[in-house]
Image 1 (spheres, helix red, strand yellow):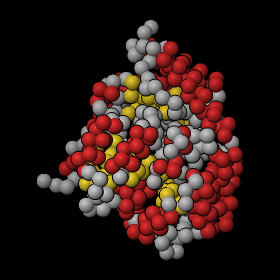
Image 2 (cartoon, rainbow, N blue to C red):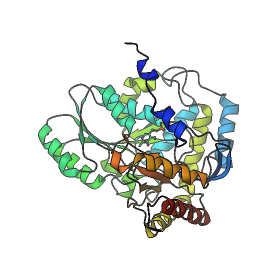
Image 3 (cartoon, rainbow, N blue to C red):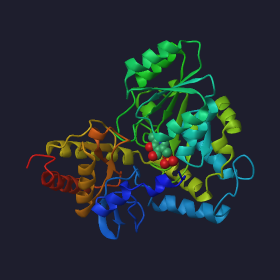
Length: 396
Ligand SMILES: Cc1ncc(COP(=O)(O)O)c(C=O)c1O
């Protein structure tokens, strides 16, 4: 028995490469935009990016990243805890707290690290975590790091959540964690009911709003704003890798919570801080999110057109309002084949297969960008229809 046996015996990906259906690690020869060059194929319509507001190529955001690099250099060479805190980090924290209308904010070097760092710091041995089954992997890894006891409830099943809360009683320390917008299917957490149950059973709430902030709510503050429940959600986590067109993650919460996490969170203390470029870009993106509401309005509008267009052609899609629009295929090989045929026809989308979803619920995850034009959306529907008919996913 050798440690590396599992590597030598791992053939799945190589078989997929040999079959020509391997859908991962495509190389981009351009930046993220609505049209990209990918695997040396030009003018590929990008319908699978989390660049929701289309800011990754915005000249103002790029300029802010360059200016921050010129002023502060290419890296911070240390943790926030010691030599790695820039005044720019502190400005971004202050601006985020103001924007999200919470007392305080805390930056992490990635969204993934934010979940690891928040959950492992705030939940300890003897505490309980209640997790929606469809929560992001970083939440589960945060739970593992925390030593708290974690229970999963079925996706958005509020009866199941209440049963768990009842079992634990009011006298235990409990944290309910949910994605605000679920990353694969694009549906929303039932936040009104989660808030009601949290109050009834004295639990705290953490919402991972990686896909909601910038997109949902009158002011772009995300799922809690969309439901009018911002004051009821104790902690909101976000990322800069999607609407904010950068890299990094954050928490907004009350001052004592952020202050505590800042001083005990290992994924915050023992890693280098966000680069000047990422911080400058995120700060500029925040300014644009606040000033240009028309971006999210257009995004929600084209998401509706895309949903309706696909439905009219006979595709089975998940209902919703967000720019994440999953198209059900229901079989892994067909999902890979559909992605390949779409790509051959100039449209990039993401396959979602087991274990991210059950094997019979595999799907094509599409996600739109605010800078997509109506014509690009119509073109994507045409290509989907051509491929869908060819594969008999929809009627001829
Ligand atoms: C719901 C959710 N939370 C957290 C993350 C991690 O964020 P990041 O990519 O910034 O590390 C992601 C990224 O895919 C996500 O979808």
